[in-house]
Image (cartoon, rainbow, N blue to C red; front, side, top):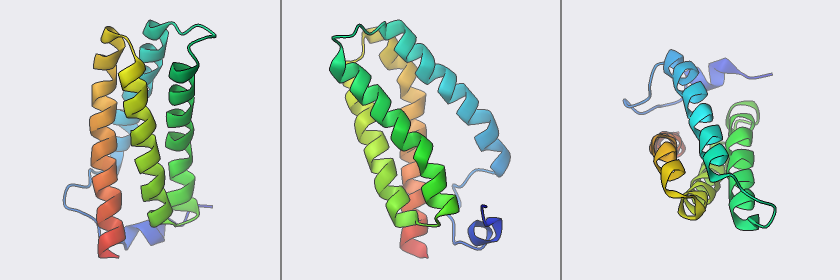
Length: 123
């Protein structure tokens, strides 16, 4: 169970978006991530592309549990670092069109990294 009071009382950056923004942004980002993989059309021998994609999705998906359920913002920040790392590696391995689809995702991850780092630093 997530302790919403814990998050509510954290010192957060003034750049923290309202809660409803996350419900709008993430579905759009997941569609763009999925389309990027679709346009890459990886083959079985595209092991680097598939690995980087899989790792960035894995680290992306566990962040919420680490941050909110386990209430471990430092570990969540490291998780975001790994998400960014594998997303950038996936970006580098991707073909031209799919790279452009990842730019909003990378920018959002950078914002998330800043917001998470702010919480670690100020709490």
